Length: 400
Ligand code: AMP
Image (tube, rainbow, N blue to C red; front, side, top):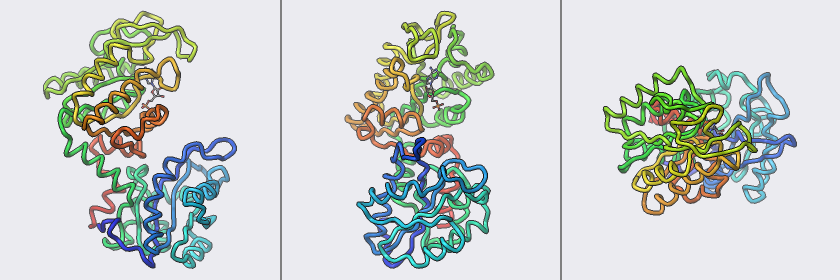
């Protein structure tokens, strides 16, 4: 695979798969442009070399073909702003005559954005013919969409077969995502703590299993911690609990003991009398929550307990919040973990935050710049740490 930074794009039409699946509000305004901003260095490098850029992406989950609310047209103006006012051309289809003609006439220094790939069912089906039509638009294929690297779709995976190995590569974003993930997965400095939170054990079981092979410590917080508390025989009141996962939690705890991996559960919790921003709150040992109350955040002792583990770690992987951080009253635990990760990073640890909600949390606290790496790909990062091969990555590296 060519090294993107070394590749000379002069006179080339680079077809880039980006992840512009950004949130839009009711007025179709972009409410978080992180993913767009993350693609700019890749675009700029190609333009600077004297190449032209054809961008393709999906947006949302259109069910039945084209629909205005999922049109990438809504992103054109903002993309142009991010490129310092450079005009961005738009093709209102991603294949077909208009896309072909506009791409064909594209001159060095120009940028073309194609319409939503998912207006065609063929995209998600990984249809070869559709992938081939897309491939015909560019001379070189650049995959910069880490967020969809776990999907074997036409534009993320199948398309790669229509380019020779010296004409397909990762973009700068993909490259740094893969590098950071590999660093944690294969060259982690020890102690290595994985902090896993969020609502459901079932969503995080595979990552926990895989991390038992890698980490020295695993911190479990968020709603999922209470299934583990239950597994240990605790009273958890009305806290979240997946009864059908209690046995899995018991098995995981004993596997961890056998492997010498230390599992840290929150010693105390902030409890509430209802799931509500205005609920009454109190602090309780996490294994003795009164009936009618529920744990919605880790408590002050747990914050300290977890911060101690984090502070002595050389590698920190964080996926999932420690509590219902969307509500003021249950935000403190997640923030204290973020601050502990920042502190450890200052002292030389490598910290990777991946997964939608922990990423929103570090952004909310203004701490994204103070950890080593914040991943843009929630699902992809999760699958990577579950130990799965990501098809979008394999499609490029396997044939090189
Ligand atoms: P996930 O998508 O599985 O990472 O879960 C993230 C969600 O888990 C967030 O929306 C949090 O509000 C929620 N969450 C975290 N802790 C708790 C808790 N103790 N009880 C209920 N929900 C929680």
